[in-house]
Image (tube, rainbow, N blue to C red):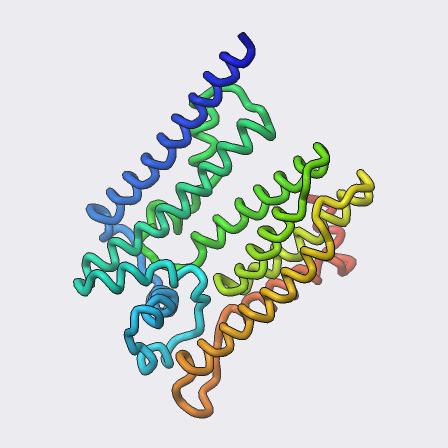
Length: 286
């Protein structure tokens, strides 16, 4: 009787996640096709992001790209088939908007998984509503016609938490953690090709692993495999980034490359302010 109920609950969860996925795709299609006049565009943000796909598609955008900042290509290379198969700009852009929809849909599905198996929340409607709202921000829904790296970056956050949850589950149940340590480290290293802000994720993962070890005296990742994989992949991906930057974004001698490192540095400066007397007092008071 228990297994029957359990299987029924699993089937309901699968159906709910399919519903969430399809609903997001349809809503995003409606915004993209019929309400695009109400949305905004990001200019060079979009152009710089799509440019990563143009490299593998065999398109020479170097002269145009030299006028905008560098944007990570780890997300946009997935768009290459669209640029290969279609030449109509209207079709290409609307198909590329679909990538944002897929990222958002997967984020909502991961959230639903957490509500089911981590927080064990009852109520099918409640879990669906929470999943949709937890992955929503204005740049993702109403102002969705923007092909930028922020949407896959949000998905990276959900995937990072999902990896951590799986690492904890395997550690606590004494299952092998070598494979997941390798995959997790590979994923974190690959993130640098999507957006520089992935550095925050690295710090958060390190802090979580360290605190968990302090509290439980257990390490949720295989340290040798994780370090070797992460460093090796980071060197590889960082090398690819330099090649792309130097040969694609900097076709003119003496050109200065700009990217998100500036904003990242400003964010670190804001974080440091918390450790001042006034900053610490304000943080505690909140």
